Amino acid sequence: MQYKDFNWEELTLLIADDDNYSHLLLDKVFKKAGAKILHAYNGSEAIDLLSTFKSQINIALIDIVMPLRNGFEVAELMSPQCPNTIFVAYSADIFKLESLRCKNAGFSRFFSKPMLPYKLLLEIDNLLLVKKGL
Image (cartoon, rainbow, N blue to C red; front, side, top):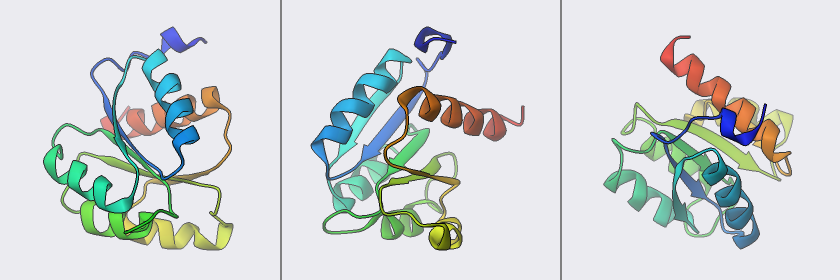
């Protein structure tokens, strides 16, 4: 498989992370798959974008440790308001003990940084298939 094998032209992803390098890397990866990208650099911006574009955001990739509002707060507040959005925790600070907390906050999955870009695409593609019932 190659990046062109992912047909995400109809998808909008939110990247919420306070690390600019993560934005640059993920933006490049997801755009190769054809997705539209929204960027938030703290939890408050993520909440604002999810509130504004709640019917358009398919995937919200959210770092746990961010300024203003952390990823748990974002997911707990916004996942009930965005039932069509898949919330994914993406953080260097995720431990196995926190997997239950992620689930309780409204995250469908969590991934540890760093993750190979292609593996991240495959995992998210699997989440999309599950959401569609395939």
